[in-house]
Amino acid sequence: MDNNNNTGYYNAGNYNTGYYNTGYRNTGNYNTGNYNAGNYNTGNYNTGYRNAGDYNTGNSNTGNNNTGNYNTGNYNTGYFNIDEPRVRIFWKETDMKKEDIVFPDWLDFNLTEWVYESDMTEEQKNDSDNQYYKTTWWILVEYDYKEAFQKSYNKATIEEQLKVKELPNFDSDIFFEISWIRIDEEEKTELTLDEIAKKFWVDVNSLKIKK
Image (cartoon, rainbow, N blue to C red; front, side):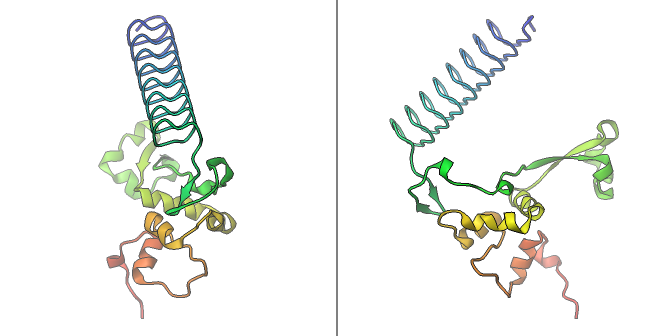
């Protein structure tokens, strides 16, 4: 490791694991920008190649947040675009841009979570894979995508939960298919056993009906 904390070679910047970088914290090569995993970027936070913009997973973009290539606009998945496309949501087109849509905060959730010893269950403490908590005082818990979706929903207020219905083209069936969370246009008074199990994240086969 050199004096600038680089593990790669020929870097003028700092904390680079790639090669020939003048920027900072790049794992790719030949970057003048920062935090790039791709190569030949002058922008920042790119996983693609030859981007002058930022946050691109595609290549040769001067715009930002593109997954396609050769775009000077933003948020494009195609090629050679100079504009910003309108949002397609719930399987339908809109006339809105991404910044025009307000998503509820609870839709931004993590698939992992630090759980400190004081909050661990006995089952977690007894799990042989978690014994490192005795040294670290915490464990890293991994959640299934839909389980994490449900946990975030459960932590939100009723008001926040229902804001999802204000999204353009909201479709409760599509939302349920993706999240396993049932938010109907009108409150349902009857649920199937399968819907109850998914709502509370339990195995339908484990449900017991008391008479």
